Image 1 (tube, rainbow, N blue to C red):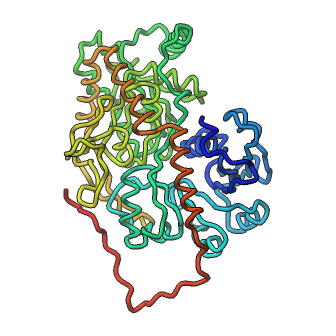
Image 2 (cartoon, rainbow, N blue to C red):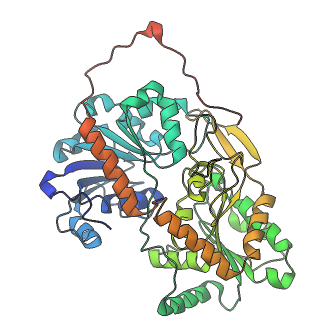
Length: 479
């Protein structure tokens, strides 16, 4: 962690109130938020409004500055934490603003969790700006998010697609916002290829804990929540179809490790799926349900020959980033922020950036990509929705296509797989900047720009209702 980058003494730093998951836990939001705090603590002071469902420590205040110092090499970090149920409420935020006197409020996660905050943005933004580390999974550009985006002063987009969506939805009002690309970054010293002799011995011992005396020559890893959009049954079917292409003795030496809940009301019963799909391969699926520390998770990525994620709507796909940093190749559906991690090239050989004419590569227009990526192109794009999110494309790939990509990885020898994985790590650490340090640098640049240009919100806004125009979506639907 580069604690010297734009270092400011504690009394000269701006204080940011970060409303998101408790940064001490291990959710995806918390992981990213923690990396953000650790990699900017030399430049900003932080107060985390630490959300959880029925938080057992709500009502308390914790000083985690010393822990931050220990993790960053700083001696004067200022990081405090207020556990709350959910993400708080207007009265609580007003109270904490009065106590902490922050210079800005920052939000992370889906905007619907913050409807209550956006309803009081007029009073907040008279005092301080609102920063939103935001994402949106897919098109059509969500005009129903327009009020949320307009309620923010800075939109830090975690994917290239999200940045374009912010600009399309805001239209002319985008010029009055700070909109920057700030992709997720992780600690690349925590996720890395294991090569030292003593660590390799530990890795073999850990592998034996998983598989026992079963000899496994090829391992596919799935690491995500058991929710419907993750397309887990399709992922399992893809693995079954792949096994069916092999002689039985070789199929028996292949395994899929699934680090997820076996049963979830938001997803399905994966044990039931296993029973119906794998009667011929009773030792093909291994469920991992215990909490893993970072070392164990890195070991699993190193045991794996490929990391797979076939989500039909995916804002980023943090397990892909973890796998890439660990030097493991990825098999992924081409949708949302997962595209960023495959480094598709446009017709000029540049890293593809979405445009209104070609807002996504989920149609497979561009086929050149990073050698570490084995993309699965969606064959069906349907518009799904709900009353609060009336329309969004659902990008679905077939299990047959995914199985073909698994076979493609299997056909490579393990040494080549690992070489391709290391190429992905090098790209992620360097050009892409999917590390905590790079995320911190990007965030500091964007937030400093905001503080240097921000003006308080006017007390009121006059709107001529006779000139209100119907919003339209300014991007192609067929491309």
